[in-house]
Picture 1 (cartoon, rainbow, N blue to C red):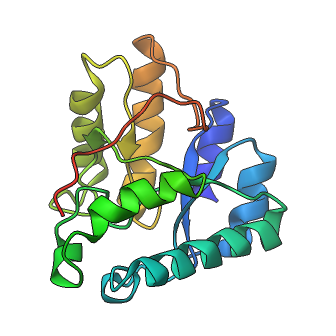
Picture 2 (tube, rainbow, N blue to C red):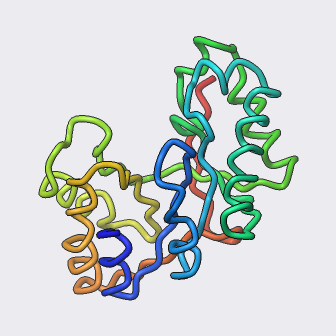
Length: 189
């Protein structure tokens, strides 16, 4: 709720990559506020989703259906758990990311990675650290796709300061769409 309120206060739109594991009751609020709903994973369990292409698509279509059931929106925007460059998938299926990055496109999906990491799922555990990482990361880029997690309260706490800094420095915030600039990592499996 705090994140949605902050985004509303500054009329900023964002993209929410949805997992079934967290707060589906907000999907209507997110969609009604004009944010993009994108797919992440139903389970986010690497050993299951990266076991095979069939397992991956079963998970992806399941989260797509949940989003559709809650909102009436059939999203074809997605992000791979761990990103397209993840190496953990190799532990379960050698070469699966090479195959999946093409297979999702063949199925009409558009996947996004990120080129700015807030590090909120890594070593950064404070709002100030997230703010510093994002500001440092977006400077000198024409287009930034920032990875942040709304399940981290300190990352949500950082959003207002990031928005204020961005607006004061001439940045525009936009949700991802099918025609957004490409942001894909190099595949490593």
